[in-house]
Image (cartoon, rainbow, N blue to C red; front, side, top):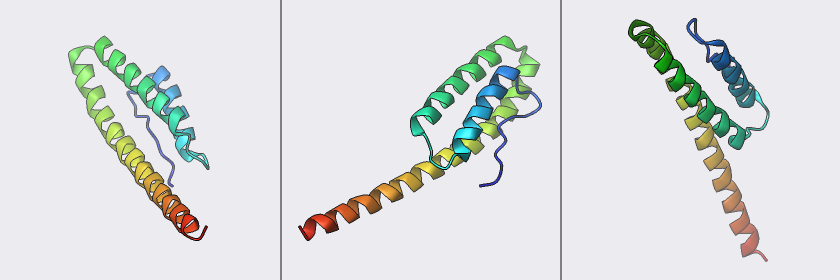
Amino acid sequence: MSKLTLNHRFTPDNLKDINGQIEAVLDARELDNELLKQLIIKRDDVVTNHLKSLERDNEKVFAEHEIIVNNTLSTIVESQLKESLTQLSGLIRGKKIVNKYK
C-alpha cells in the first residue's frame, strides 16, 4: 500500500497524533481491527470538537479538507473489510471441506 497521509495543512496537532496512530495501524502487517475502531471513534470526536471551536470561514475550509481525508479513510477501511470477509469465507469453506472428510 502506498504511504497514507491523513493530515492536511489545517490539521491540528492533537488530530495529527491520532492520524499518525491510524496510519501505523493500517501499515502494520496484521490489522488490529479493534484498535482501528477505537482510533477512528477518537478521531471523530477530535474533528467534531475542533469544528465547534472554529469560526464559520475556518470551519468551512477545515471541513472541506476533512471530507477528502474521511473519504480516503472510508475507502481504505471498506477495502480492509472486504479483504477480511474474503479470508473468512475461505476459512469457512476450508472448515466445511475438512468436516466433510471426518
